[in-house]
Length: 128
Image (cartoon, rainbow, N blue to C red):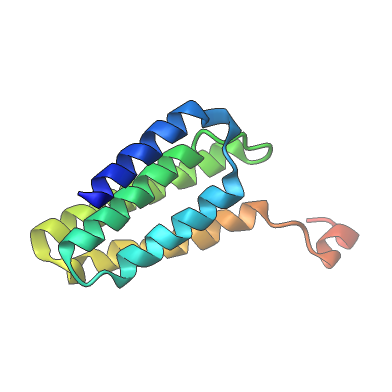
């Protein structure tokens, strides 16, 4: 019940400040929700964490991406799909079955975060 109330509050707060979101804080909360879903030992805890994670991902899609907007939104959509798949697998087959999509989420995170990393010294010096 507590998780449902938190999810509802997150949904309504994200709607009211859609374009003014603090992406960095949102991403930290996403990381925490993701870790909570990975560490969950029962289905109720997992579902609460993964639901919060999905809501935060949807909120992140409203951010003002100054660079790589299309790729960033594509990455967020892929992560949302993996999170939903993990939830479905956890419900039908158990928490162990959800581990593969959760691992895929971490790989997607690494891939799409590379888009927003500042260029390194050698890249600045010699170009791409």
